[in-house]
Length: 220
Image 1 (cartoon, rainbow, N blue to C red):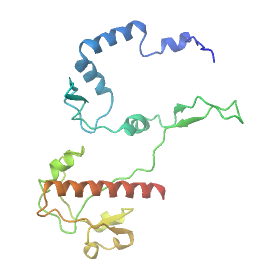
Image 2: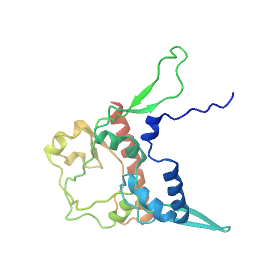
Image 3: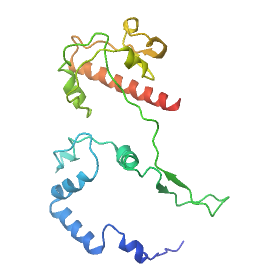
Image 4: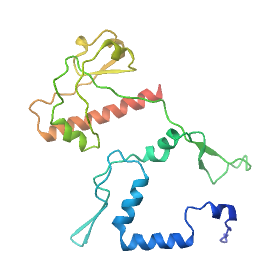
């Protein structure tokens, strides 16, 4: 099949983010000072945990390592979809598929941005501690979760009432009224006298179970 060159219309050219001159200038900066260039452009997306390191590379034949934004945490789906929904553009076309169905060559399939129903997880205990176990904080930071000013709180009937699902850890018999009908009990061991590796394994098991629960709730 022969190559086909399609000219850009003047209207599209006017709306382009860069023209040829600007592209060449940006490319030159990216080559001369990549850390500064990508440090600036890295701020164009939303970060769960903002980066402080931009470029960390080694091309030593015995120690090849290429890391960008290594201490930052982001969510690709949020940046591609959710933040545009939040900005009020949820009904705008997000994707034009270039191929068209054979049965209807005049149809151009598109997809609008959308999101599943909003879900929020809340944590509470039948007997709240005075403070969050300090061992937990760095374990959560390792996976991009910041507790901020959060403090332990007690599970209340009101909290149970507005919940779609209640997850317990062997304490269902002590939960407020209404929990039993919504509950599933997870056999997660306590953190007492556990090593850091054991605690990481517990954390990762919880993340897996939470992801599974979220997918089941969306499918309902």
